[in-house]
Image (cartoon, rainbow, N blue to C red; front, side):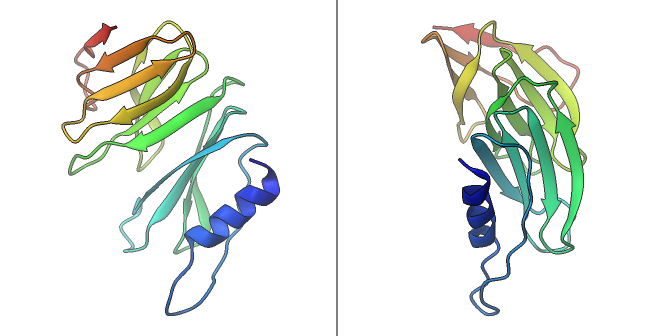
Length: 158
């Protein structure tokens, strides 16, 4: 996705049917982008987390039009992000480094991680918060517990 496409995508994300198109441009990094949406600052307006395969991720307040936090992966690209389906969601991030990170979406702090052993290209969070991840080499990995805790994360490889 080019920078121009990202600009258009973010403009559409802030569309309000009563007020018309109300855009806000943000730039994370050139490359493919993955986006998650949630109200991160409890202002009643959905905010955007966008991550690029260039290794940079930021959260933006749509209501206040400001950056909330940034997380840099030292050049290893983020391939996919999603929020869990818990009352207090967890931001799940897959990376070309082979790690999956579990982040507090409200402040961008990494709470835990799992080393899958090869680049994770895509994943899905089930309704019961299990994570099914697909790797670059064709493995499918099931991650059972993605809670923000110090407990070990269970994983099975298929």
